[in-house]
Length: 333
Image (cartoon, rainbow, N blue to C red; front, side, top):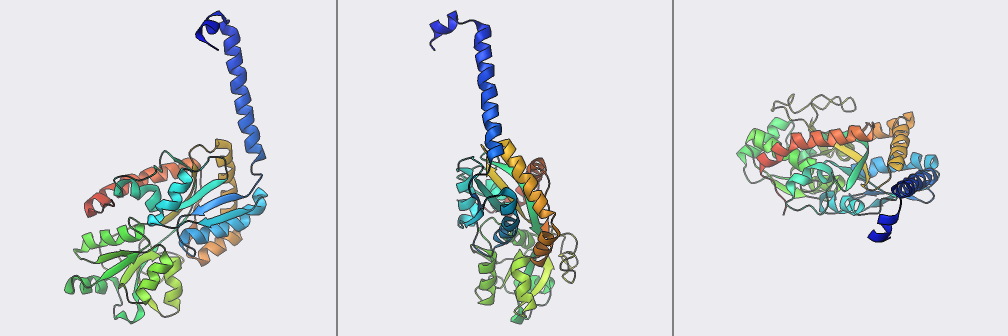
């Protein structure tokens, strides 16, 4: 329709057509949401198999599949500290069949750490639900001779340059927590990043690094097997799932608090009705006693809540962690 045609076209009829078009578009979107899903739903885990996001994703997927009436497929897409898989979903179609369960780093910290992050988690992704979280556990090899976190700090002070620590990737909470510990205690240790928490733990067992502060699900089985010793948890209070492990403050150090959390996100263009449905279904799954039991067995706590709750939580994490990241001087090119 050219400008001459518009000038002759009655305004009331033009507005009526626009209203009808908008109504049809809304009805179509609603119909799409009601029909969703009609094929398998993909949840990308931006870390390796056996990592904390992978564990919680698979626990949820088992219960989500029958509720959605379609298979929920878990796809591991590790690399770049979680950026590869998270960024892939940020760029994916917002058709309701692409989700990611990502963590602190790719969803918040990396916006500060990277000069040019290849995606923007605050504009290219939309929150679905905060699925769960767990304390990081600082641990050493059982035969290290170190029995407390204070002893580890003292050993680092006496032997500068001789301690390495592993993490789940550059900019991950498992790195930033130790970097904060180093700042608070005036110590030094070399950071060696790995693609997942199991690989980070393997590095300790093989003697490639001396310690790590990584998710409990990777640490505690090795502690129970007598291969590692847990020194402290990263939360402000002792975990009810690990009551014998002291907090950092109880271990005689300055109070350091952080939580390894996992959130489900979708491409920003995903229809609101689909996001709400996915949020409701995941919340229902997280409330199941058998799911809670499985998560507790992996030293995780289900969280849940609304999309808005997650959005506010991420903004709060950004406000809290930005000055910490800048103070430690960590950057990623």
